[in-house]
Image (cartoon, rainbow, N blue to C red):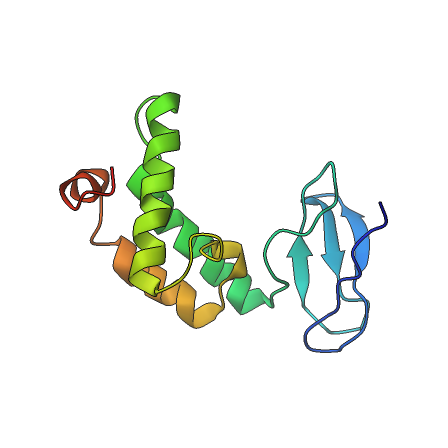
Length: 132
């Protein structure tokens, strides 16, 4: 199967798959000065989410830091169930389908909304609301 042609949303040119020392395989825009990057699965090289600039990448990292605290505790078995419940809750709050509810797809504003929502949520509240 051929690689997906991933276009830079700013420059409208194909992004290049590059092996970086710090992050492994990533898609980068080849235009000098363009900061659009995109992570991918290291084995398949399939893109994860949507390409983003530095501000959006930082917002996504912040959203994950706050949101992941909701579900990432306890045993491995419980984490899977808790993660699914947390994403179901988040999709409901954002008015998205569960399929589209992935932080790697979010823009800056949506990530900031995730941070605000997640700061006031925990696993026990998910259970009280009936998501678990």
